Picture 1 (cartoon, rainbow, N blue to C red):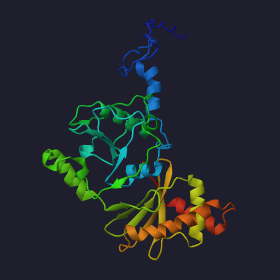
Picture 2: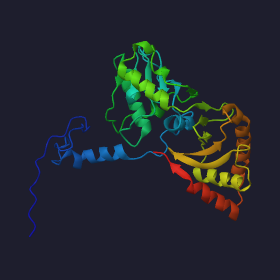
Picture 3: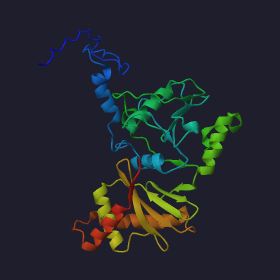
Length: 320
């Protein structure tokens, strides 16, 4: 015979209807008698881990946001806030990465730098970055902003930023933008700066097309182009061009595959070491025109195009 379950004591529910966050093993403040992790903490944990596939969707320059998060070593972009800047914050700048992997930095003059490349607390990168940004606005000048738990109901970048403002990254050769005066850097920051500069690959953003980034590696050069189209449509179009021998960017270049990052597809070309960023401009613009025509085609893929698509899919790597 099953034992009768002893009724749990009823606790008074918190005023205002909101359940505060407590320790996972503590009684839930809602008064259920259960531990927080088995009650309201369960919903909070689920919200914190649910992956948002396209965190930058709806932001100007979504493709460039993805590039700065995953591909570009050193770059900055000025950000415009929807409600304007606080009086003691002269500017807000997005950076690829900051020293010591800080999520954000409040300079001595009050200016804010936010790093897009940092460890995220939840599955929604947009919410995590918005949380870091809003905390940086009220941090004491001259200090980094630490990592903290992101509230699952907090604002996202789409709520915080002015969506009418342009988003145009400036790519840098190194990370000197970290500091107002490199002579005032601590030994730890100086060492971090030196390591970052040594590891950074020479990178440039093409001016004639959107979100295409050239980079140099020891063996060859590459072009990595973040594209906004739906993945299936884009792969079909790339397959049509590849099967027709029209997917390269000229002699000695080759479409070798693609990345999948934050809901977008990033085709990658191998380039000869003699081909710099400027030499990519015209071939990339011409490829963009061919791609637009291939995207407009609605005929079923031929057997050769299906084989080309399969090859491209097999060479796709997901960046996390």
